[in-house]
Amino acid sequence: MKKQVQSQHRSRTSGDGRNNPLTPALAVRLAVVTLLDGVLRERRQLSELLAEGTMLGPLSGPDRARAQRLTNETLRNLDRADFVLSRFIDRLPPAPGLLVLRLATVELCALGEAAHGVVDSAVTLMRKDRRSAKMAGLANAVLRKVASEGPALWATLPPPQLPSWLRRRLIHIYDEAIVQAMETAHLSPAPTDLTVRDSSQTQAWAVTLGAEHLPTGSLRLPASGQLTDLPGYAEGAWWVQDAAAAIPVRALAPQKGEQILDLCAAPGGKSMQLAASGAKVTALDSSATRMARVQENLARTGLHAHCVVADALTWSNARTFDAVLLDAPCSATGTVRRHPDLPHVKGGKGLHDVFELQSRMIDAALSFLKPGGRLTYCTCSLLTEEGELQAKTAIERHGLLDETPAPEDLGLPTTSRVPTGGLRLRPDFWPERGGMDGFFVAVLRKSENGGPNTG
Image (cartoon, rainbow, N blue to C red; front, side, top):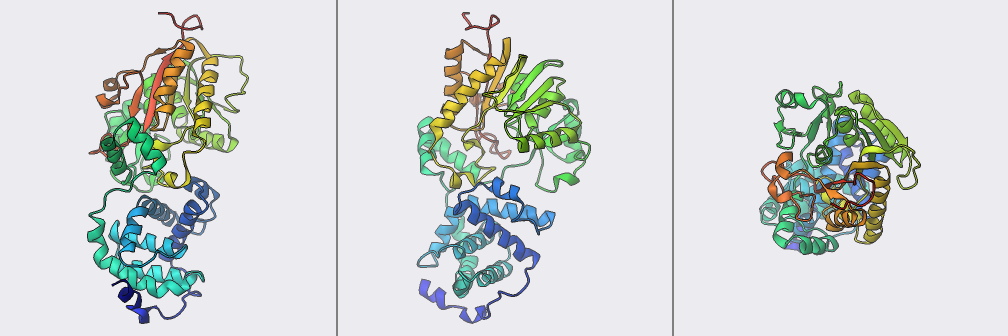
């Protein structure tokens, strides 16, 4: 059957197609293939590639958004796409031909795009690259088989598994059923959540935007779209922030007039939450580029924070703070549904260095804290070494008290409570609502005398 497919429709692929100008639809697909190559071959994060601006530069705003969506959807479904393709071809070809076939398979099987446009575009892209031009006829035949038989096969496939280095760790921490639930959650794009600047107006904005008012206080938009066109964007009435990412500040419960330090502040969502509460915020980040983004977000929302570019481990500051928020550098394994490139560019190497850095940053954060002050420690990781164990050892090392609010006080599932202290949020929570990012959050109080707690 595979050899028959290879010879089928050969007459439809005549001509090289290399000199034809790109239509907008072709330009989008070419950008997707280029981004996929950057992630899969160069092992670069998608955010880094997008920040360069060169790959999506010629595209319009809507086309740029479509290119990003198609790239993410293809990354989520690489294993499925390869499985379907393997049913109709003896051996998967090398890149760039394979990337074109994967993209087309995802468009046909996952997104239900019209077969004629997808197949013709894929063949044209094959012809435009000398490395894959000879595969244009094969692509035509294979993708027509995928279009007719692939969707039914696709529907029977389980969600792609996480990479083995991570999956083994997570099964040990949780169990296989929970990990499978996480993998199911990773298969769907992350919804768009908003934090409203004036929390008393959250319900009113829910009505205006047609959004769901989540139990945690965030708003969840019904569908993705051009955010800049929505009511409230221009005047900075709200900002985009995953519901889980908004929990650390809500757990900290900042008070008006408190002096609060936000370490690792970029991109600024938590700094804006703190400032909106009436706290006097110092936002610190080691990157001037990332800090510029914090300042842009503060300016749009009309909020204020004292912004400092410095390394938290070496920053010299005579003043101490009522509270410190530390969203520590981590493996980001809790954000795979939002960043499906991560499993393809990150591995298990270097994790122990990250764990050690987190411990050092906790120690530094406590040095900036007044006696009796509160430290909120959080990471967007699913690994206990970056969450539960860090909080436990910090409590033992410094005699801290765990004062994390109860889950029900924050609108969270009761299963988020960690027996040893803190909150564990997972992507498989709220499956009926579209899930949330994976996070660990703990609020730890320093003793009143500045030394270890004894009571």
